[in-house]
Amino acid sequence: MMRRLPVFLLMTIALLAARPLAAEAPHPLLIAHVTPSTGRFALHSESDRRGAQMAVDEANAAGGVLGRPVVMISRDPSLDPAQAARVARDLILRTHVAFMVGAISSDVAAAMSAVCQSYGVIFINTNSSAPSEAVENAHRTKFVFDANAANYNRTLLKYALDRTASKRVLLLTEDDAWGRSSAQASRPIIAANGGRVVGQVMAPATLSDPAALLAKIAALPSDVVAVNISGDNQIRLFSHIPAQQLRQRAWVVGEVDWEELYPAPGTPRPLFGIPWAWTFATPGTRAFVARYRARYGRSTLPYPGHITRTAYLATQALLQAVRQAGTTSTHAVIRQLEQYRASPAEAMQDDAAVMDPLSHHLQQSTYIATWHPRTDHPELGLEVLGHVSPAANFYEKERHTVLEPLSATPQYTP
Image (tube, rainbow, N blue to C red):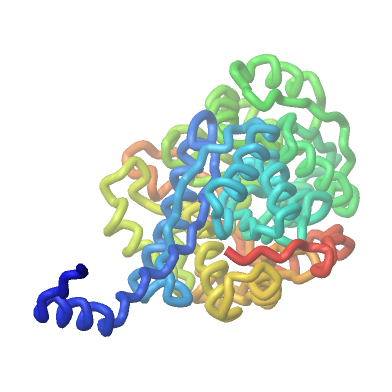
């Protein structure tokens, strides 16, 4: 015989059944920050991470994106392209990330973005500047936010060659994707400005002793040395160049990062390109520097460099595109990113920055700069010599970039 349940228990069950179920917490929007956090780009990677994290934190403080909190995770892809490709595949298939941002190394960017394209995952290249990233290695799902070596060298080499007589140029080239691509892009620029390449000295990707390179350079008569060497290699190189050898030629460096200047304040850098500096009087700069200083002012890099600024801008652009699309679906977000435009205040530059829908490379201002070594206040060693508009630094090969059709790009909705 079945016993009846007590009346109070029946009433409790009825009340619980009538109560609406609590709403499930929204699924986080997972962004993978991928940069080589060990080795010669460790400090660059940390700077990149800080910029991306600042943008993520500001988005969450404003309520997230499409009602979802944004969570950023960091992965070290190493400097090995094959390992970087494996990391990208694992992040997509096992971690189920929504997007990837970062790179620093152009070899890493090329490897990871190729994997992302095959799955339809958007890859935001924040800070690797090989010209090939916007031409040979461009993809429909990849967007490149750093100015590249071709942008810088278009004006830097003209600046140097206009001040020399015989216009002989020696290429000093790092043996990696960034170095080779940068040197190749320099050749037509040199020719267009009446110069001629008299030789090329290749530097290993891991430069332990610059003495042999400097001996080769000394043996080749030239007026300009076009330097495409990055990271700690650049610090090591310039710390070994005798002052007399620096004065004999015009040394032009395609790009110098703050992470190669501030930690080595006594090392000279004659002439180089940058997209931004914390000392700029451009709109938006002072407020951004204040936010950075409040958060990282007591860290190894108490002042932000352009790597931090560009990672911040790029991550902001991605999250803004998702909001505007109203979805995380790849095709919709790509369409928004292809229309991206940052005002001078948003870009923290003298001109607006505009995404080129053909190459997926952000067209932006660049600046000619030099470095005055001083150990008392290294943060004040940078001097800007000139401003170059996006139209004046444009890389012509980007007019012929070919991206995969959107129709052939997998649809991915995290």
